[in-house]
Image 1: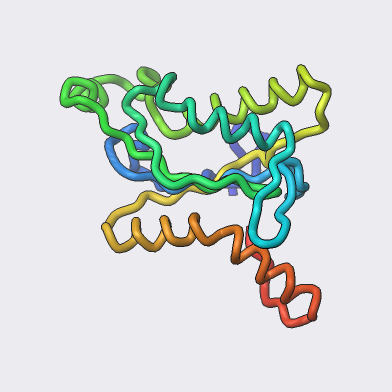
Image 2 (image 1 turned 90 degrees about the vertical axis):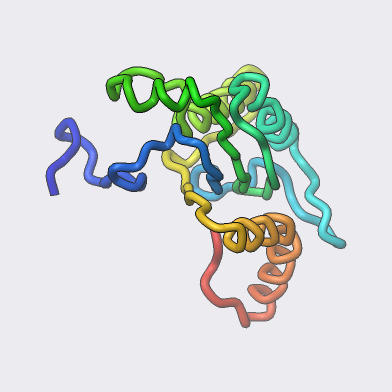
Length: 182
C-alpha cells in the first residue's frame, strides 16, 4: 500500500466518493486513547458518573449546534471511554448548491470531520488547561444512517449502551464474555 505523505500506512476509514458535508444522519463513535476511562465510570443501577472531562465533553457536544447551526442533535451518550452520538445535517438549498459548485478545498468547515475535530480539540484544550490527563484515539468511527429502521436501531443502541456495558462487565467477571465492544 502506498503511504500518504510517506508516513501513514492506514487508509482512510471514510467512504470514498462520499461528501460528508451533505444533509443526512451520521452516527459517530469517538474513543479515548487506549480506551482509558477518562470520562467517568458506571455504577449500579446504570448511572454514568461523569468526571470533569466527561462533563465537559457532554457540554461541548450539546453546544455543537451553536457553532454549526445546520447540525441538529439526536441521541447521545458519554461512556467511560467513548462517546456515541447522532448528528443530523440540515443545510439550506443555497448551502447545498455551494457544496456542488465549490472545489474540494473550500467549505471544509461544514463537514463531519471539521465538527468532530472541533469537538475533540475543545475537550483536549479543557483537559490541558485544567491539567487533567486526557488523550483521544486518533480516529473516529462514523456510519451514514440510510433508513428509518437503521436510525431506530442505532438510537436504541445508544439509549441502552449503559445497560449493555453493565451486562458485559458482569459477563467478563463471570468468564462468559464474548468479544469486547468499543
